[in-house]
Each structure stands twice: as structure tokens, then as C-alpha cells.
Image 1 (cartoon, rainbow, N blue to C red):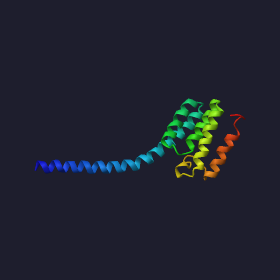
Image 2 (cartoon, rainbow, N blue to C red):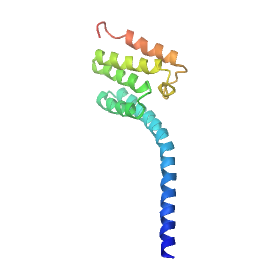
Image 3 (cartoon, one colour):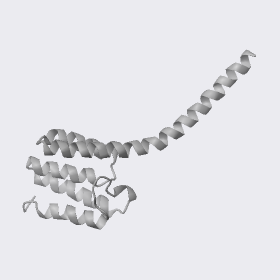
Image 4 (tube, rainbow, N blue to C red):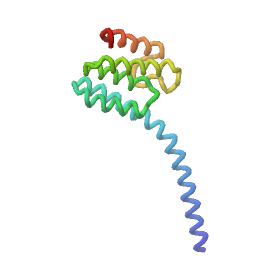
Amino acid sequence: MQTRRVLLYIVLIAVGFVAGFSANSWLSSRGFEEAAKANLYLSGESLRKNDPVGAMGYAQSARCNAPNAYDPYEAIGDIYVKLGNPKAARKMYEAAIGRLASGDRDSMPFTKGVVSAEDATKLVKQKVEALPPGA
């Protein structure tokens, strides 16, 4: 009787582990995307409040949560422009354009009202063109 109870607990723990692992895998990818959206929003708010250091922290977190999305790279480029570092801004804008050019589904914007990769690419290229020469 005691052996059966122990075996039952072992089976229940194993089943719970497998179910939890599966649910966690599904939720974690969704959670990262939601965290990236929230961090990009907070980054924009910080930048509007003239807090580029705080904005950078949020944008970097978004980049970690959604490394294939172009949005965090564009946001970091905007912050570098605000900080007066056009060379670093250019690198981030080019990284954003590269993400869009990859055609990867994960590169598409998820926080902006941009409808296509082509439109997003045009907008980021306009930012690159607005940088000072030699940057």
C-alpha cells in the first residue's frame, strides 16, 4: 500500500512537471513579446519626459525580450539621437533595417501602426538620412 502511494506521487509529479513545462514554453514566448511591448512603451514615455538614460534601460530590455524585432533597435537609435551620438544611432537604425530585410516574421513591428515591412523600412531610412553627414 505504501509503495503504491509513493509510485502514485511520483507519477503525479512527473505528469505535473511535463504539463507545467509545456505550458511554460508556450507562455514564455508570449510573455517575452508582451514584456517587449511594455518596455518599448515605457522607453517612449521616458524619452518624452527627457529621461534618455531610463529610456535606454527600457529599450535594452525590449531588445533582450524581442531580439529579432526591429522596434527596439529603432528606439535605441532614437535615444542615441537624443543623446547626441549620431554614429551609434546610425548603427542601431541599420540594425533595425537589417531585421526588417530578413523577412523573419518576428522582425515585424508589434507596437507601431506600421502596416508593412516596406513602410517601416522607409521610415527608418528617413531617420538615417536625417542624421548629420559622416555619422
